Image 1 (cartoon, rainbow, N blue to C red):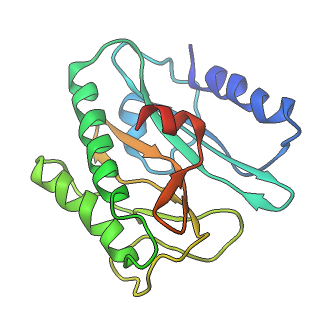
Image 2 (cartoon, rainbow, N blue to C red; image 1 turned 180 degrees about the vertical axis):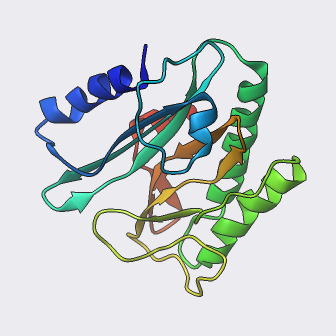
Length: 190
């Protein structure tokens, strides 16, 4: 299939559920094109073994979301290994996602783990608030703590220049005792 064909299939799901607004066009980027954080969907044919980034930004009743995930087209030990490393780094960061944790820790932990694995540093924030809120921004330069009921997208990522990238971006709610992953797909995969 081509990237735009996959995007058309994905866009039907929110449309059929009454979500017709987006804060950005659905991104489907495969192979080397996936190495760009904000690639646009193209007519590129997805190849066997390619990493495929799917990133959607639905808006419902003024509340925005942003969900990204990396899939593999066929088998690729190389990309399977990187996906596993990113998932592990994300899980390590989520262990600290609870009230009172400085948000900079959620940035630091996965970056440190991915560097330890010999992977390149992510060129963007570890992530951002969703739902129309202004915080938490997950970055090393932010100086505040997680609070109960904060909701954010959490996206430690690896970009391999010229080859592709791996992004896994669950939605996270800070609960009184810890956190909850809100995206059902990510609850099952992380």
